Image 1 (cartoon, helix red, strand yellow):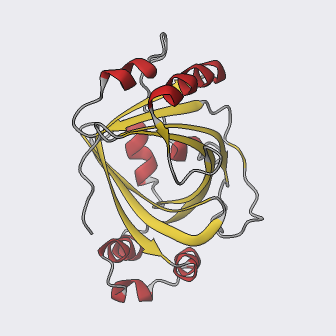
Image 2: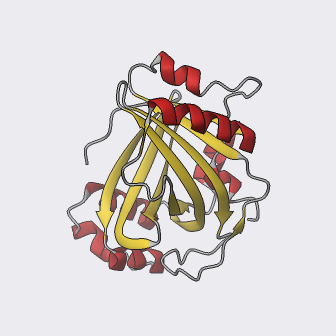
Length: 226
């Protein structure tokens, strides 16, 4: 389980007009994510937390060192599923990832955990320990649409996330008929991530006068109904 290096990250809550303007500027200098279909993809994640809502509380309280677990797949295709752990430290982020089959993901959702210890995947084993001994469990589904752009110098990634929907307390995330509802009045979220430097050309593209950096969390937003 090799970690990706810690990366810088900006988040801004923007409106639809901002999206149109910034998207147009980015199209002139950046490239679309090659995995996107028609310039975007649909993301479905299942987030984990314990009975005390540790991950949620740490996010709301702005704890300096925190982590969260989720299972994720794209465009309704369960043939490629990943277990992910995102960690934050002093405003920098990193992500660990491990593959799961649809059968394994469903077993986790169903509470069938014993196989995880012998999986040979350290991240799966870590989730097992936290589910078994810290009470971590599937909490809610988070659905949204993402438009991604890539600028290779600086390994920059700019994304727009919108149409954020919550499964409330539903955890059957492999069920395409699982009902999700709009997560309140969620804004459009622009995220900018980079390694050691943010090129000026991208910095200029994403400038939005009057918009401030935010600590918006899609998981926290999707917990507004419980």
